[in-house]
Image (cartoon, rainbow, N blue to C red; front, side, top):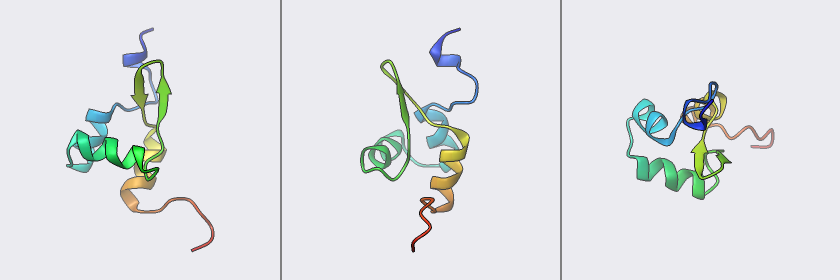
Length: 64
């Protein structure tokens, strides 16, 4: 199975389309640590749970 079609993970373009922002913005959010992502080889993948957390504006920390 190719990593590009790995079930349970989203690509940067998919997350950008869901959030209606640019791919650049998604990559910026990943770099700043606001959106959790995983590297699988040279590919960057995001879980749907991490996407939902980022889009809702919660970071998962109990202390606010």
